[in-house]
Length: 138
Ligand SMILES: O=C(Nc1ccc(C(=O)N2CC(c3nccs3)C2)s1)[C@@H]1CCCN1
Image 1 (cartoon, rainbow, N blue to C red):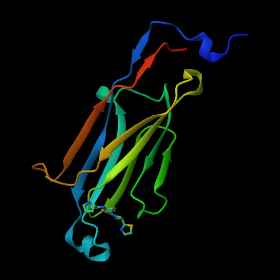
Image 2 (cartoon, rainbow, N blue to C red; image 1 turned 45 degrees about the vertical axis):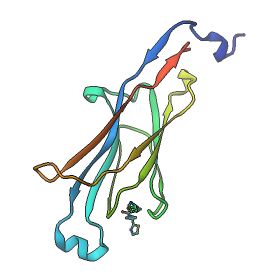
Image 3 (cartoon, rainbow, N blue to C red; image 1 turned 90 degrees about the vertical axis):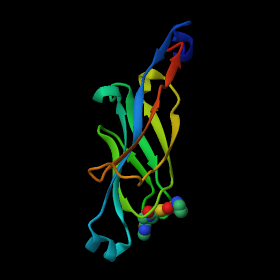
Image 4 (cartoon, helix red, strand yellow; image 1 turned 90 degrees about the horizontal axis):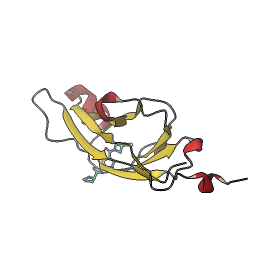
């Protein structure tokens, strides 16, 4: 009986382009007085042009800065995103976990959360692109 690794298709490479990053908008002044948080932000992992990635991405784990409550946030269905408020910029670790039948190891990503500069409508988008590549897929 072949093990999953032995059932791989030699010489085939599958590329799955994804986009991950954050948007951020300033909080209204009265809100910042309560918590000193100045922005609301959303960090997300998406397919290019909004393509559904849940057929191969089983879950996404976001690791926030340790000062956030429950900094390890697991999202098991799309949209794979986390929204929070805060006052500063820091590096988030993101780990993509794939469906079991892919037999692929999780892929780590890193994103520097950006709160500045604003776009004209007050939001900023800081996005990265990545292309998890699966060689000799099952
Ligand atoms: O900003 C930075 N690190 C940050 C870590 C966490 C940040 C944040 O925004 N928050 C923690 C969360 C909470 N506040 C209260 C209770 S939980 C809101 S900011 C670095 C240092 C200067 C340059 N970049």
